[in-house]
Image 1 (cartoon, rainbow, N blue to C red):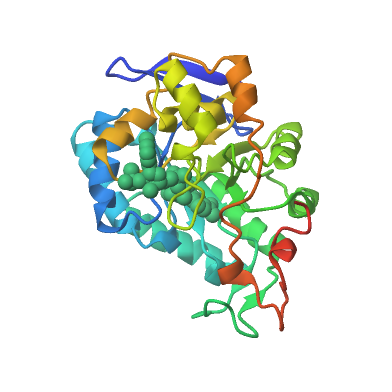
Image 2: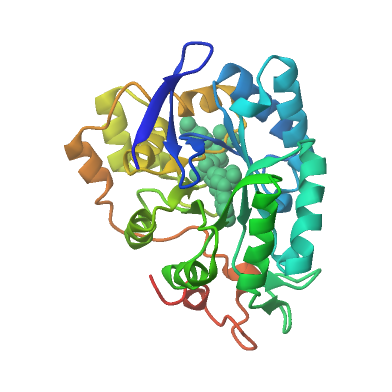
Length: 323
Ligand code: NDP
């Protein structure tokens, strides 16, 4: 899937990818996890000063009202809703067919929007209301994939969401979904950065026409694998006269994925999207793609694994033993 270059009204070059539905997803979006009350300012800065048109949020982040306020202020400043791409996600406690539509309605209300551009299943497991961390017996369940997906499809047919997709699926789960889907998921959002390339998943999605959005593209921070200080990244950034953040974002774009770095810092927000008028040369791209010690940051053991009671007894169980 090729990226298409265009210009924003401010004359800034920008890129997007074409989804199976025909809609376009802007190549760089602002992540908003752990943004809290500062999300309003971050979103406004990104949209009005940074030239972003893509915002990623989720009900579970607890910041949809703040994100919505930032979008509203940006629209008052002249940005048009039809030029924006807003993503949110259906959380695990709501992962049953009858909860899909009411939960989307809450999300739309919180965001003060009439439709979403993309609605994603956040994780492929259902959690009980008030599930503890780590989960106790009876907190984690399989979910009714076909039933939930039918409801997601109805949201798209009713134009409450323009595209639907999934996060944190494995190849096994995507195959299961593809076998029952009338509407193929447009997007799979999953962790990807040079410290966790996730090549097999990317390949599978490409073959099936599913666009990939790379989350935690900088390796995340708290408890993550912050790649900003990685030696290879730093060396290539210096050589190209770019920042490590820009190199990490660009690496994702050159792999054909959209990328959603999170920042609350106005300078870093603006820096992370200045990635469209240069390329990482092949040799450096290969060096970034050869970083050893591949390890996912977001293994989510604390949310889903109960070693004794199951049903997921290990991180490998979450990921269907595919890693
Ligand atoms: P990122 O990989 O985007 O890293 C964010 C961290 O990097 C922050 O601490 C930020 O600090 C810092 N940072 C940002 N830009 C720069 C820069 N240019 N130079 C140095 N440091 C920088 O982490 P996330 O885990 O937040 O992932 C991004 C987004 O992906 C999330 O916010 C969320 O929207 C989505 N996501 C989705 C998941 C899912 O299950 N679907 C799971 C995880 C994430 P500061 O704010 O101070 O700049």
